[in-house]
Length: 154
Image 1 (cartoon, rainbow, N blue to C red):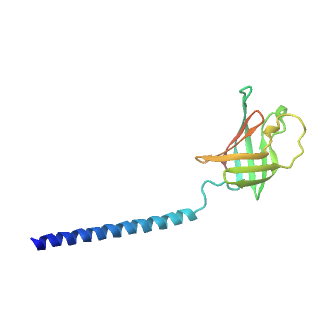
Image 2 (cartoon, rainbow, N blue to C red; image 1 turned 30 degrees about the vertical axis):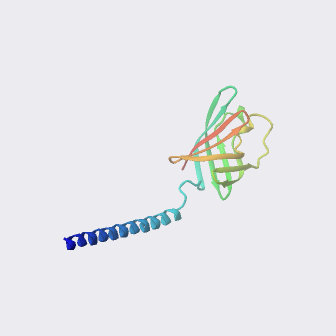
Image 3 (tube, rainbow, N blue to C red; image 1 turned 180 degrees about the vertical axis):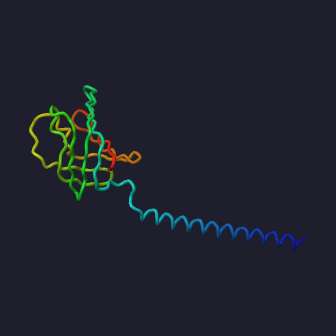
């Protein structure tokens, strides 16, 4: 009886050792996988290239919402933004330098625009960005409303 009891204790200790080894192996594998994953390029970062999509301008006071096609080219810290907006809404677009910090992208337009139209349509100032699937969404509060770019990298 004592021998049978002793072998069960021995078996339980062996199972605990095997479980502990499995647990340690799982932890080691997880840490290695995590380190490889963290070394990969951030899949939510804005890459250089050409982005096309829409610019939507929403006015808070009138609840008016206007949408145009737009293209933004980002390269070496510089940007160019063009749009098919109607001339009555000019100036639209912009070009200059940009920088990214966290989830914010700051555009510094270098153009001398005439003092007419909605200057909120100039891609200038601080915007927040996020990714929805493969779409890049850039938005900012401008004057009495919101400017939002919904873009896809070409």
